[in-house]
Amino acid sequence: MLLKQKNIPNHVAIIMDGNGRWANKKDLPRHKGHEEGLLVLSKIINVIYKAEIKHLTVFAFSSENWKRPREEVKSLLALFENALVKNFQFLIDKKIKFKMLGSLSRFPKSLLLKVKELENKTKNFKHFNFYLAAGYGSKDEIVNAANALSKEGKTITEKSLRNAFFIPKLPDVDLMIRTGGEKRLSNFLLWQSAYAELYFLDALWPDFKTRHFQAALNFYSSKERKFGKVSKN
Ligand code: IPE
Ligand code: IPE
Ligand code: MG
Image (tube, rainbow, N blue to C red; front, side):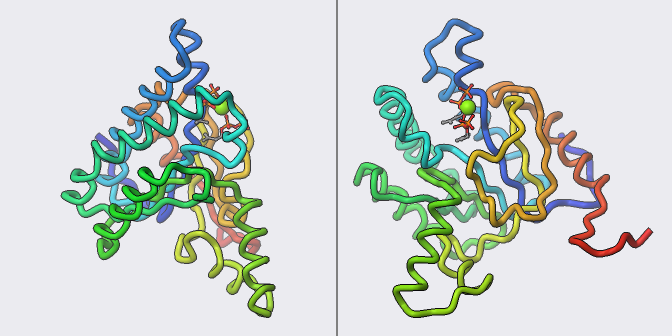
C-alpha cells in the first residue's frame, strides 16, 4: 500500500534496468530476468494506477537494444507478444489507455497487429495512460520529427516538433526513475525530461517493490520545481 501523497507527479517514466544482472546473480539465463521483470511490471502498473497517477511510460526496449545477441532479441519479442495477449483483456477491463512509442518497422507483423488492436480498443479511456516505449530512442524521435516537418516545409518550433513526435500528447515527465544503479538516461525521453526530477536506485528491476516506488514519490514530493524561476520560499 502506498501512503497518500500531497504532490503526485502527473507523468512517471521508468527505465526498467537490471534484468540481466538479476538473472546472472541467480545463475539463470538472461531471459529469465526479463520474465521476472515483466511480472514486476504488472504489479507496479497496479500500484501506480491506484496512486492516481495519470501517465506512466516504461522503457522496455531501446533503439540500441536491437544490437543485442539475436537470441536475446528473439526472446524479448516473444515475451512482449505473450504479455500483450495475456494482459489484453485486463487493460480493457481496467479502462487503461495503452499506446506504444518507438520505431515500429523492425517488429513482427503479428505483434504490431495486436498493438494496434489494443490501442484502438483503449483509445477513448482517459483515466490512466500506459505508454510502452519499445524500439524507442529519443534521438530517433527528434530526427524523425524534424525530417517530417522539413518535408512538409514547416517551421521547426518547440510546438511543431512535439506534434511530430511518436505521441504528440505525451506530457513532460515529472518523475524519472531508473533501477539497476546506472545514472544515465540511455536515449529515453530526452526532450520530455528536460525538467524531470531524476531518481536513481541500485535495486535491479526484478527486485523493485512498492516501497521503492514509495521512496521515489517521497523524493519527488520533497523537491521544489522551479523551472528556471526564483524560489518561492
Ligand atoms: C533491462 O535490463 C531490460 C532491457 C534492456 C530489455 P537489461 O537487460 O539491460 O539488464 P542488465 O542491465 O544487463 O542487468
Ligand atoms: C536501457 O537499458 C533500456 C531499457 C531499460 C529498456 P540498457 O541496459 O539498454 O542501457 P545501457 O546500455 O546500460 O545504457
Ligand atoms: Mg541494462
